[in-house]
Length: 173
Ligand code: HEC
Image (cartoon, rainbow, N blue to C red; front, side, top):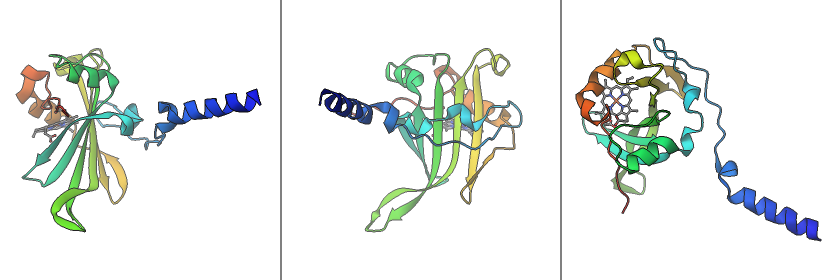
């Protein structure tokens, strides 16, 4: 009897823990052409926390910015510089009108998943200590971005003062 109660408690504990909540999706083996960063470097990103959402009016795209626990904490504390090991993921979505309420717009298809990782040792030469990677989704399949990361570095240099990040933490209260 005791054993059954203990087993029940264990199952309950596991059920409510993060371990079972985690989406264990294997990401495809993809690598960037110029810095060797892989897609599975951010395995488990589906469970990262959202720090901001953005909308590109010129592209009609919705973007979610998610952070791993290291980056999330730093974003929340409004850190000037993100700590080593920070991973920030951006998902770009096309949008569509909601079937039952066309005045509302919702996310439709994922167009790309990209990330920045803070790794001073590997990305010392970049000047910003960030590694960049982008994976584009077409017809349900991901492919790595084939144009190299110089463009990423170039554009993100516009926000040098905020550690090369455009995103600021969006408070939910
Ligand atoms: C022409 C400018 C431009 C280029 C090129 C660019 N980005 Fe960005 N990036 C932005 C802007 C603007 C934002 C914030 C708005 C948004 O979410 O779209 C952003 C946001 C991000 C974020 C969220 C963190 C942050 O800085 O706000 C990541 C991660 C990111 N970009 C990765 C990349 C990667 C990887 C590449 C190259 C493959 C890249 N970016 C190329 C302009 C650019």
